[in-house]
Length: 282
Image 1 (cartoon, helix red, strand yellow):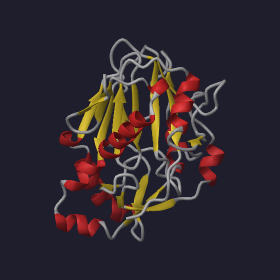
Image 2 (tube, rainbow, N blue to C red):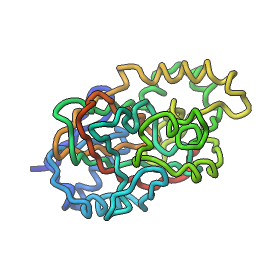
Image 3 (cartoon, rainbow, N blue to C red):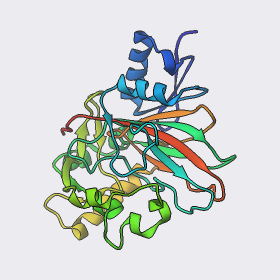
């Protein structure tokens, strides 16, 4: 049976009739095209080992070894995204895109479900292609003149108000405040031209964008809040329901994601590999 690609409402595509352990070159080209077009792709019923997860990721590019997440004890390429039964805070429990705090943001992440609660723990995705396209031409033009500052310190750093310091997510799951404090803030265009698809996308996010370049945080806040509210619109989003054997592969330049924290008292473990990206341009 030939590979099947089904466009989902809001954002993303589900790809079936494919085995990620043994993708032919033509199948890989179809998967790559769907990834570029849709921003996030989903797979079901995949029986993939850690080594096969790594091999699939390497077909896309060099692997980014995460500085802040706990690593798999036998496979440092794999970051553990987990929550234990007695923990209250999950990782990624707010809208964001990964690695916008890097000078060259990561291309995307391949998340494999390893242990799931009976219910809950879904992940929402939002399309920054669609969010940009829905803006007026005048607003698009104005945003194209702006750049934004992105930072990791208020999430992973030593400050008393950081996410690391104020949640139990730092309980063996995220850390490395030293790296966060040394990481310099970076500037990216607010509107980027996606390096794979050539489409325009909004590139700000609630977790790591702190202000517009040349503006104060106070001056930036109203416009950022307006953009965030716009990007969270249900018409741009899809909620992915995890099942055993499910895999999500999202593009950090074209989507946001948000993991629901609604499975207290149950364990959830996901394995994430992040692929390096390329410089962004407007």
